[in-house]
Image (cartoon, rainbow, N blue to C red; front, side, top):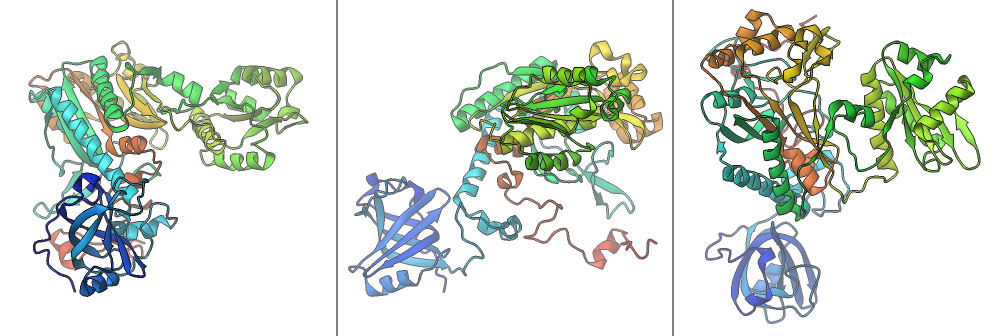
Length: 597
């Protein structure tokens, strides 16, 4: 049976017990990690979120209390009163290892069944089982420490921005749907039949309206939601450290963001970050790394071979160049032993995931050479490729060619990361922090045969490129910037358009009619009529910041109750059906696959 707390109010946390408490009566509360019975001795390891302490019972313990201690099982919730004493067997590996609580009173506050898995940090079980019982998984010390670190990061951000004059303001969760970009999560309205709210993908429009309202420095730890296909580092709902500033340019916003990162690294990791951070223009990042979020802690940079093979008779290479794409290579220097033919075959399959039709290779070992493509080239072309990539014995040349440069970049950008991971080339002790700047303002949407905003349609073009918006949109650059940490986009932002005429031009450039722009964004355009200062901002992904600062590569590790890859929660079993009465109140009918045929 469970007992009430009574006078057993906690004196301190389990992880706080120290030699200076010897001789004092204390009350500890927590979960039982384990119990050991040694003849006339019983030891219980008690755990809370701060650590563990040992409870002791011996032959001087009253019989009823000794028997109660013997009945305790793992994960029971208990409180124990007693006197702190020196341990006979000191454990130097834990902060509380010199002392123990000699128990005089013990209360079982809640009994526990045997958990479906051991609650220890080195467990190796399926993720779905852990998330099914996430409340148990959250008891593990490493998971708790990660969430404590998340709290510290959020608090540090709030303190930093408060010191710099920012005002924290909450923006609505039920907003107007603006379907440009990722899919919205829609919420049906009961009182407005047939109409819907949207859950925010970001507070973008509202923080711009706050700038129009005179709040020149805004902050929000904002929950955002996007109904998009998930990847390992994405969740349908995520949290942003969201900011906006008035009367600023790119330099001001970037400097303020750098200050936050410097503060976080110092307070969370005790590391110094030198400012200003280095910058790489978007075009250079793509050419060198095949990615706009490059991890530059290792080499494997891309080499453009297009000029070398432009007139080759090998149609795979020549065709890629002639069709407006390129042929590019990675030289995996000194990795011919690690990248065996079998491993290269796996990499061929790997790049196909990113749209590449194949992966050409030349493997140069000390004993022999092998190549999938050199027999189709002239000696001059073969020598030109080797010279261009700086090939030597022991290297492996890996080449992707395609008429679509996006495919070449995506395949080789992912390939360099995969090789680095497989071959241990990444120095995990280093933190690689940089800016990517000068992004394209637009990108081409092949599915809809039109240009769309690369970030969002409120991003200001470079002043020198404004007249390219209509005449040459692919050449138009944006006043946009992303902060990249260890190959993750940690934050991104831009200077915003504050001129209503330019904003209308932007809408027109991405295919909006005047009527469509007014229907979706009329309230913003209306606000712009009454004066709005130049403004810009940045949003950091809190989840990703926690990932890089805690050293995990799984975003689910840093969220208390995450979703699986299919956006479901195995613990609460959502999404789930709802009662017919609820659907009727919302004027919604479910259309099944059969009835839709």
